[in-house]
Image 1: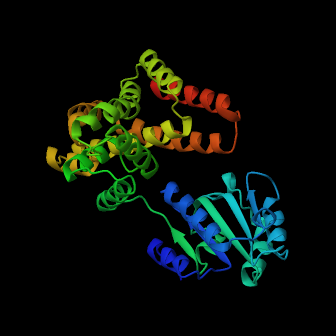
Image 2: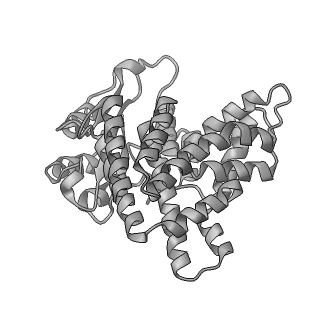
Length: 347
């Protein structure tokens, strides 16, 4: 029976460690934190961790067999061996799978009789439960889905991070910060850390400080680039993209922000065409704060078919960068992102 995030946390607190875990879902930051927490719970002080911890990426051919073979080895001077299998992808079709049909017999055999002295953690980027491989992993007793946090979940996370940093922020300011960032827990965590430092010595974070340190970055990443794309302004697109990347923006991070913004635009456009009132559109698309009017204007200008096409191409480029298709490393990722935005601007 699948576990909730809370059930997993409680089991780890009690040091109840299972032999196999499957972690999947859109909220990759919390997923990755959970994987680290499981690994930490597996080792005691004095264990020879370096000899008993392995990580295998399924982007490399046959690594699933290597990982399962490692899991069958006895631990060395420790109670457990931990094997983490990353980059697990089982899509709607087999084309982009990293867990192949030919691997399933070996995987099923291991899952039926896992090593009692090993812990295997499958970290999945995509796990389609309608496919045999996806169902096999999802049906594990310790499979945990990490869905995007809703507004209440984001508020709870923000308050938790503020306590960790010894900082304070009123509810209105927290909501404004979340509206600027979107459902990106990784970035929310980073921004709260920055704001807490900037608010020293009082550590009371006011909305003006959020506007100063977060709003401009968010505007560039969330709106300037996507609005230029929606407007088919190729020259402006390259100017904004170059500025974002030169200022340290990560291609995958920018892709994620663009995907989130395009999905919100698609929701808003669809509701507008259906005759929804402004308040309903604002709420559904989470278009709060000073960017509300520019966002609604962009949605009114957009073409719904082009928005949907862009969402698909963003997902394809995200996968291509993660699997080093079309160029590896920072340079290859940058080239792929530049080619994509030019394609979208010309559409």
